[in-house]
Figure 1: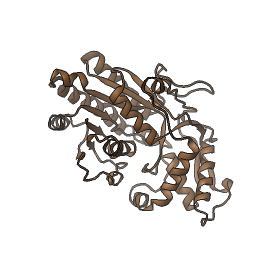
Figure 2: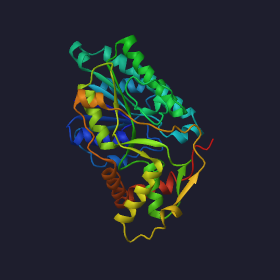
Figure 3: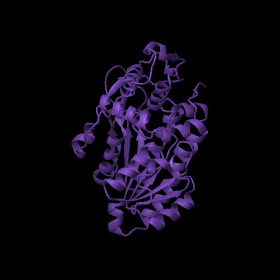
Figure 4: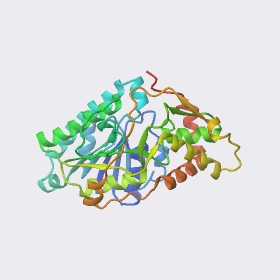
Length: 350
């Protein structure tokens, strides 16, 4: 299978490229703009592999994307290119509007033109998978789960931009017939995640004995999904999902932020006993909450599990421990990021 992956130098995108090339044997063309959070070192395992190609391009450059599609002739597009950090969307929403909304529109337009030019049998089999987030649904109360029919109620500039892109993708299917699929995932974690994100930031701060900033009271709840489980789900969705459908992807691993922090500290202590860390209370620092901070997310993945046979393989404790171990053993990956791109500063204070 020949697949274009947009945003394939990002955290989830690079994991998807590695998985499709090494585990599935697919032909993958990675299109990435190479913004601050992209890192081609995350693709070192497949660099030079016969099934992998990279091309630097902006999805908002519709003419260039159209030429790339015409040359590569993919069987599917897996669209992950997006600005994704909520805090950065609070500080500068414009980039999120340009990439997540305008960029998705340009990509859809190029994909539609390409799809219309295919032979009938290839038209029938072509798929456009749009990878989105559970944050489009807003915030849950103490009970219940998001399912595919949950009402959209985005509360941050990031989630609003992703909700907009979801609606564009759905409209291109119903109006123009483009064979699309949409997935909405819960919070991802795992190796190669940019250090501004919650779990790697907590790991690296704990390793260095620095304060671990926890927003508000730390009782915000997220459903954590290991990136390896996520990319396995995406492969099933693009290959076997029903055109026009949405599939929610969640790890069934709900946890309060403060509990994640305690687990991270515990794993850092256990896996690197030579480090002398203060007690948890001395390491943890409660800070001003994020504006509009959603209280709880949780995904009902029943549809994906029952219809496509997917099951998450990582429970949270195992996944967190493996992730802490990876960061402990890969300083050569994250230290240059801390030196040149992000030093752990607070974002999104508005």
